[in-house]
Length: 357
Image 1 (cartoon, rainbow, N blue to C red):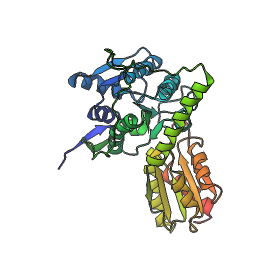
Image 2: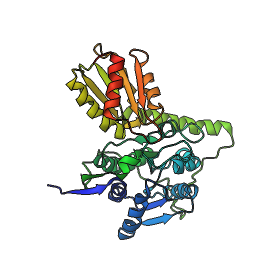
Image 3: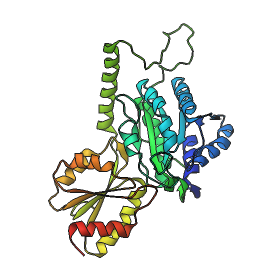
């Protein structure tokens, strides 16, 4: 039986990356994810890898670009304002079809905001925070164990589709400690393609590999976009992940991800004591979003209302409304700036909407 160890979320991120075969890390310090870089700076030399603290987030993401172009398993991590600075480079990486892993341990915003946990980077992550028509695969763990597993899987997804993958955590998940098994779960059998596109040097035995995101001829740029669009359609068909809890027969359904999904479980338990049946839908992939599952909830006759519960001013709620397509009323409850909704205040809001006590 595998032994459990008590580990902090940020340190688990680093160890999971090592477990996944990542041997290159480039980043820049920012709270509340500093321990990711601190941990990896100690571990990378032990496994023959490369850790480099860049002079800025802009430099870090472009170092990721270079290492990914050479075929390396590479990652960076940051927190909200730092991810904002990386957006141009992320757009370049997506356009160049390069695999990498990006971890965002979200903090309150906008601007410099504060260092408390938040979910206000949902739009930035899922709608493409940089310029152009591109997508990231966005994975949202709700426990430290799941974060470890999704980081390992995230590297494989990145390699399979030649696309950046983002782990969207938050300051609470990064700073808490939980017992975990530091062994990857059985990995999904993926056909990982050879990186024969990588710029690893050319001795004349093959054509030179060129990695580029600049296309001055409109027809060529459109063709690149069509290739990307086709890839994103395949990801939407194959990579949706979610967890549903007690949705069948529920009076109301809470849609929540990450830390808020943990709080939603307590809400559902308290609601049951009041005779209210509350189900939970937890998106694990924020992109691709489980629209079909949300649409199915809209067709359930017993469901009176759907609630999007977030640590933001209301972002995921837009995707929930798209999935429901007007079939059920959709309500939003959230707190901002690093404030965390309590189960009781959420339950009070649900009771007010359903007009029950």
